[in-house]
Length: 536
Image (cartoon, rainbow, N blue to C red; front, side, top):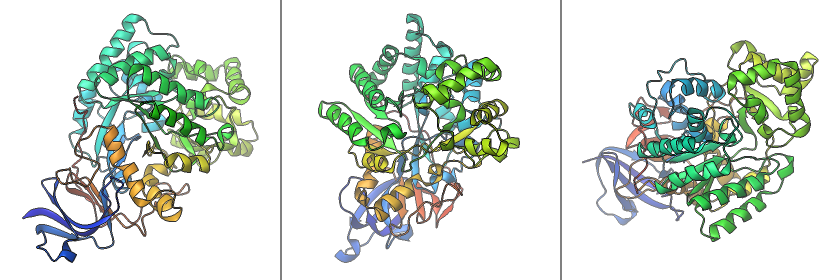
């Protein structure tokens, strides 16, 4: 007999086609047969060592989180209930141009300091790798869900050029190309950038184009956090489209939002730009999270000139009164490039986490609220936090627009990504709630997408971008990365007030045919592994 049969499930297979009733049989981690309408047909029903009655439940492929920040979380806590409970069976790591491979000892320390707010410093992690392949091997020791990796362009630049704002020399560019090629050969699926984060933001388009040529030649894709999501957002999107067309490299736009007051109601302009490019032959996809606020670090808002040289140089500038005054002017008057060219509105900046527990009183309040309580200017509060927390403070930025969120998620190139930072006392609820929120709020409650459309956005579309030949669909021969959920009750538990609550209505999740969620509870299984680039 086979391992498992899921009986009488309403199969939403990820293709976008209508749901159908079937028994689905799993053996040795793969779907071995699908018997449609078995009960009604009166045929011999498949048998297995275990059976699940899925009456009233939808069976779909596992969800693929195209933008995850679990790079250390998966090592710190391989149980990874935050994502497994949502039905996520694969995450894409190495996002926004900063992660932990490839590095040397110097760069590793710099990167750990720079993105403490995303992942913690990592005191509890044994950093026993330096290469992309070494990091993927580390994941292969056992994790709850599968993980793919993007080579972080900012980390590559830090390793070769440093944290200075200057063009790379020809020799440095050659070395960066070699590092990107090596990472792809070791299994990375593409390249990411954080073009509002140092040092990735210091790369000129010509440099990025040359790196993307390498990525395209290996069958990978480029995933930029582009140069602006505020003032100049459309120009920044167009820049990435033109750059990747020149490089002959597929493009995946990270957290493709239109934020800040200057972009209210402007999603149709972005979608028209993308449609023109797609019709001209461009290979473009994008991901979004189903919420309006964004999430980043407080230090990310600083102007690029103030961030040059790395974390210690930033702290030195913040403690110098004259330089701090220049930073304040850029933030509050000019519009810092770190804040997407828009003057900061301190009432929209909510502190979501601090590295130093002694600063916990700031969490859950906006910078302006904390400043008012102390009888000081918001900049003075922000500056104190940045220095005392050594740049480790994370924030929610309440600058999004619901009409833009809904318009973009309907697009034919859309996929889902949580952009979920798992650290901090009050993280963004998208880390725990993205995928059930799509299914519950935007499908069942609002009807923005049909169930079949939404599942395709979260499964087969990202699998196609990742060039995975046996994931993303409920098909015979495919890997049994599967989710059973109740379409009547599926919903996120996470809220802004209680962001770590787990979802409801997802009783079963399988990774490689093994239950990681069973009867609504996390098992002790760790079947996840690295998912490496499929060679051309």
